[in-house]
Image (spheres, rainbow, N blue to C red):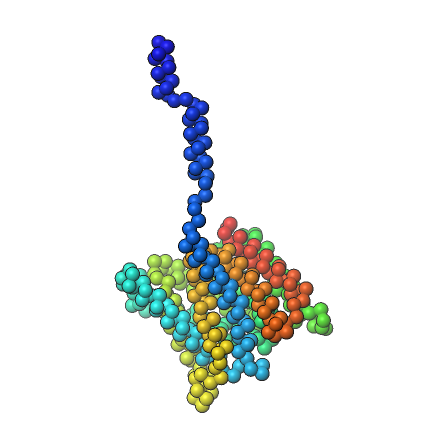
Length: 345
């Protein structure tokens, strides 16, 4: 009987030993997985690229002016931006065709119903992109980087109206902070004018924000309507219509100048760099959202605002006031809160 009881205990197992084994297994499960160095390097690369491109965008636009005006045609510059983005999309598609072959989701052939939705965002982006040149008559480069964040508010409100997506309380609080931060950054204590940016500058910034927000929300709705469709195909058709609308803008606004002086009249190395920057910025945003996340984009935007301000001190004699520093800090916090609220929604 004693032998049988001991044998049964060995069969059932010692509870203490089982507890030790369970703790050992749990400890192994709690160990974080090894860091994927390739993924980390890719994420770091696209983050640095977006930060650099975003911070230099406004600087290049201001730098491309001569004696306070643009010697080149801004409509031709916009056309070249769309053409370069279209070319990059085609190059990405060609790579996909070589590796995966041509499928129903990555072929360029399409239907009228699918293509007919792209002219609307293309037209909105056309007006928005033209405005971003003319707004610098009223706003400096650091101020532009601050004010263009107003598109976060327009995007959030349009998300609620068009896509019926609810906003969290954190996001609404972030909107209030964003407005306060933008206003604080524009305070002008050394002048009778309360704000550095004039009324016309604020109006242009608000119109740009509305156009950018509506175009972004509308484009997202188009893309998500057919999720399996290759993003490069969708970008290609959007950029094709962007090129077409910019051709119309050239004919309406700068036809005589282009015919008499030439398409590339007034272009300089800075103008070429600006065009490349604009095209790569659009590609970089999509890469960040694919290989990184929204938090990374938030940090890139916040750092870019400060980098633009610091560089402008040396290039354009920008005065880095306490109001601007505090305002940019509040804007950075509001962008971060908006992102956190989006993730927690």
